[in-house]
Each structure stands twice: as structure tokens, then as C-alpha cells.
Length: 112
Image (cartoon, rainbow, N blue to C red; front, top):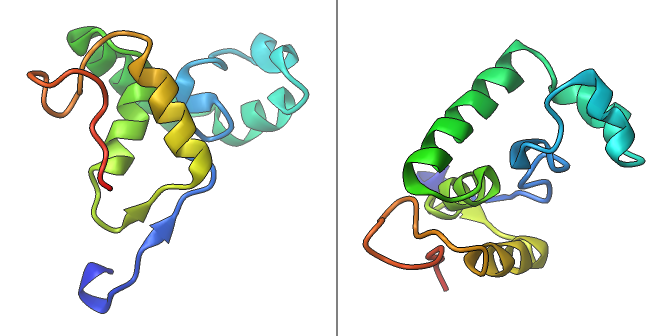
């Protein structure tokens, strides 16, 4: 895509909070009004593999799964963030932990 000058604007950076780890079982559907939809869309074998990977990486770097998911997206040159993601990334910096891509730096790094 970059070769053609095309980028992606990801509105649902955290997959409606699924990538934050909020929804891990069918019983979690009651945590919000959109919970049932999130469970239906993402709580499957692939979704659980993704959460397991996020858990392992976030534990290794002592950050949240949401920070890992956002950092991954922000490090891709063709991925453009919405203002919502910038606000979430800013809030994530305040939760402690470091840059999961470059652990020597504090806070999530982001372009621009």
C-alpha cells in the first residue's frame, strides 16, 4: 500500500475494547452495551490467540495490552490514527510502563 501512497485510518484501534482485554469470556458481554457484539465478533480462536500474544508481550514490558495494540499500529507507516487513538495513547502513557517497541524510552512513542 505504501508504494501506492495509500494509508489506512483505523477507527476501531482497540476493536471496541476487545484488544484491551476487557472481553475474555461470554459472561463479559454484560460489561457494556456493545459487549454482546464484541463477543460475537471477536471472541473466537483467533481472538483468543491475539489476546494471549498481547498478554505475553504486555507482561514482558510491564504495560497494558491496549498499549501494545496501539503501539503496534502507530509503528506502521501506512497506519493513520484518529484523534480518539491519540487521546487513548496519551492516557496510556500515564499508566506507567514504557515504549513496547523501544523499552529504553518512557511512554508510547508516536509519529507527528
